[in-house]
Image 1 (spheres, helix red, strand yellow):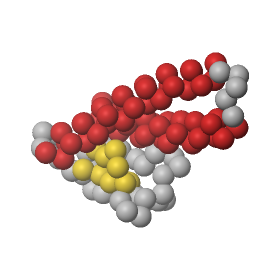
Image 2 (tube, one colour; image 1 turned 90 degrees about the vertical axis):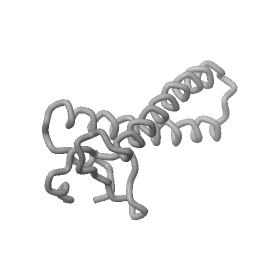
Image 3 (cartoon, helix red, strand yellow; image 1 turned 135 degrees about the vertical axis):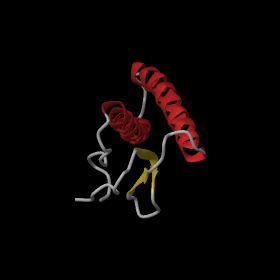
Image 4 (tube, rainbow, N blue to C red; image 1 turned 120 degrees about the vertical axis):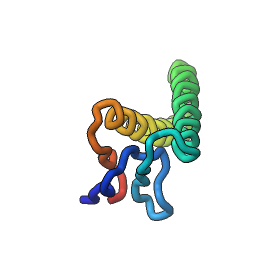
Length: 106
């Protein structure tokens, strides 16, 4: 199990090239914090659009197995992103140190 760095204040919405979580030690006002806010906003917007697409595709009873499989992959990725954002924001609201979301590489 990976331990968060001493004084970590935020789980960032991206990982290292090896898939490990990235943490930020900051007062929350710097460039990296603003970049993370922007990335989170984009990912949440994409998740919302994906939900609309999923609803449309699932209404179409002619959707193929390949289309449904692709949709399931994208929904899984999106859910992972949203859970990571929720955990990061929850840790900041609750004042606790962030921890890697379950399912993340450790």
